[in-house]
Amino acid sequence: MTDRFAERLLRWFDRHGRKDLPWQQTDAAGRRDAYRVWLSEVMLQQTQVATVIPYFHRFVDTLPTLPDLAAADEDTVLALWSGLGYYRRARFLHRAAQRCLAEHAGELPRDIDALLDLPGIGRSTAGAILAQAHGLPFPILDGNVKRVLARWHGIHGDTARSSVEKTLWALAESHTPAERSADYTQAIMDLGATVCTRSQPHCDGCPLRADCVALRDGLTAQLPTPRRAKPIPTRQALLLVLRDADGRVLLERRGPQGVWAGLWSLPEAESPAEAWQIAARHARLGDAATLPPFVHVFSHYRLAAEPWLFDRVQALPAVADSSDARWITPRQGMQLGLPAPIRSLLDSLADSIPEDSR
Image (tube, rainbow, N blue to C red):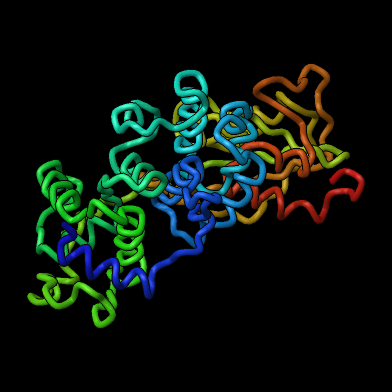
């Protein structure tokens, strides 16, 4: 039986919920594509809907089905993901698609345990796939849902703590209705994203306001319990832009560990002396010009980058394209997985590149 929490939420969704998102499209039988639901759920982790939509369209235009994703090479997948950040999500998508092709006839399984066994799929993502694509009554617990439940029930404590999360999972399961589970899961995500927001929630427009503990007790700013912010260190780096007379730039594939793992980026140095040594290994050099510095924020540190442009260099004959180094034009670079700031940096240089090299 649907409880009053779900009833009010569904009534609100019928009038105000988002029903035209690209991953909500249905076939002639009214069913959603599990692949699109899965892709959207992974993209939406730590990323807002408005940001995700153009990336989603680009991704499914190129890789419209799960077998297409499984058959793609990693560079293609990372290039389509470039700019969304948290690139491990894309690698897990790729690996999970390959597992589905090998073990599940090219489809996402409808069994919760089989879904959880795939790379990158946790309990909330699995629940969203089963509820959104198949109408099964599985709960979800993303950041928006945690916020709604913590406020309405008055749950204190860090929502990432296992004891608090266990409580929230139990509440999420108790509220998830046996029917209209797809609409319900979208409704509670929408409420958290558009009404029960992190700061300055719009309580007057909330269908749950009548018995929300946080609103009643004046705790909407205190719930969910904020995490204690940790100071983020800053790391300095020099980025080397080696560009030849044809407008080609040297890119290197980063190693399998650390930030931007497996992506194509510019050679990097920690000191001017090291920068000249690295550059000299790849090309005959002239002078270097400094480009505008920038700061890129990761989850655990800031990268303060100063790009150095070595222009019209002559690539050394010993430096040939390989699996981990390439001289490419900006147009070719757009087909590779590039970190967003590197892509922007190369874009900013495009105006000074000969027209026939673009």
